[in-house]
Length: 344
Image (cartoon, rainbow, N blue to C red; front, side, top):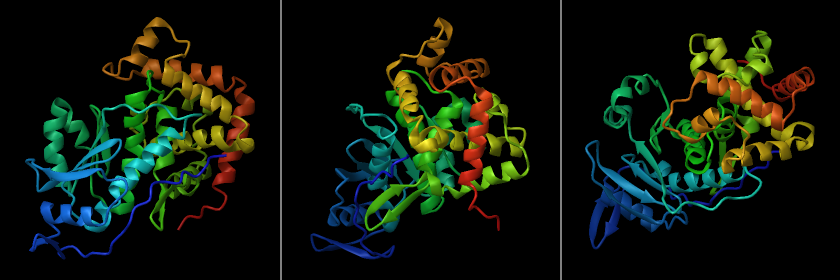
């Protein structure tokens, strides 16, 4: 069964935006970088190693450093910002939990940009993505991972943490896995980190309560729009962008498929799932020379053919090739996990 990841504790101090912090006899507005530094240091967050002013062209900002992350942010909202260091470190531990045992961390920290609003995010994106800017600016409400960095803007606490958890998985496996993952697996795992619960200073990831994906899955089942399992394994998001139903089906079914491999039958396929991921982590998949080159070199764009061949090959190798039986069990699992989901 998928275990809940108990995440890093943070302390919330209720402080309204605009309240003042005292420093050397001078009262600092908390909605300034200096005031926010005073505030964050005063509450002694266990995950925050350091905080300082971030000089940038987009707005007053801070650089927050944790054990595994550098967070560059123009978001100066205290009740949310004091949770960000704990959230990213909690997510990092959750990503590690996908593997049978934790891996050694790189001394180079992972980079996160968190902007206060979309205007700042768009200005940064135009510069950061270069010729690809038009593509990334089509993102209506969310975030992206590119060139080693997660780039986000504030869309509300819950939604911001949701996309940060999702894109953070792409960042984590791009940093540590020798081989890139096929789309169904990469996106399926990322969606496990879209729903988190905060309780008394602790974060919990709860994929079983991801109502966005569960609602989409129930709608897909109801409309009889399920993508056959064998086809799902060969797809990438770029192939289904023309149809809202197909996009919804690809994502919600990939989410359900990863949960199926981890949870169904009291986790009977979990060792196989772990072997699959470990092979990608260590570069031990049995791939052709051409497919191995694409798997290793992230600079090579993910091709339809690579995803089609490797996605299916790996599933057959590690999980099984009796698709009639697997399809039946997978569909039963999908119906079970959406049984209590009701449409408004």
